[in-house]
Structure formats: C-alpha cells, structure tokens
Length: 126
Image 1 (cartoon, rainbow, N blue to C red):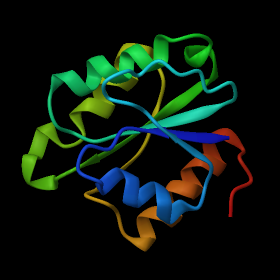
Image 2: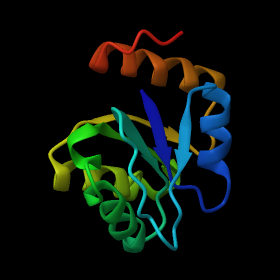
Image 3: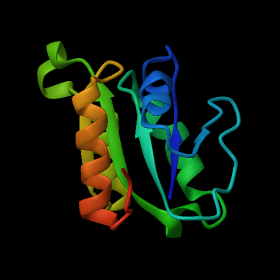
C-alpha cells in the first residue's frame, strides 16, 4: 500500500514522513502519474483547485481502480470547512474518508491513521 499526497505548505509532507510509509507526492502543476498499486490520498484544505488537481490525479490511468480512500489535513478553526477537500473528494469518488488530522498531525494522529488503514484495508501496518 502506498500514500499519495499533495502538500503545498509542507504540513501534509511532514505527516507522511512521520508515518514512514511508502509515498508519492502529487505534483500540483502536472498531477499525471500512475501509482500502480492500492493507495490512499492525503490532501490539505485550501481551495477548490485542490479538489480539481487531485481529481485529475485519481482519474489518471488505473489510479481510480487502486484508490482505497481519502485522508484530510485541515484547521479545526474553519469549523464546517474542516478538511472539506478530502470530504468532497470522498463523496465525488464514492470512497471513504478514512481519517482527518489538524496541520501536520501528532504522534497519536500517526497511530490512529495507521489503525484506520489496518482496519479498513487490512494493511498490516505497524
């Protein structure tokens, strides 16, 4: 299993690095890369363009068939807009929103994220 992620400020990248899992960073300017194996997508919450760029990535090649779900990073101060990009993508692609975390996450977020992957996808991640 792999993590695909988009990080504009570095918060999502920091979170992904804390997980120690295999990953691929989505290029904002050219999100056309095929993952080739089951994966989850982690996205920040910024604007509608994030949803559009990640949608292009998911729709490329066999990515949509290998997509397991979405994870969102956001700021709880934005209330109902918290992790809206991940929520919108999950709805659009009819995949689960597996986990959300604030900013670059805490050690507990990393643990809970891995637990969510294990529970949902049987990933066997420690």
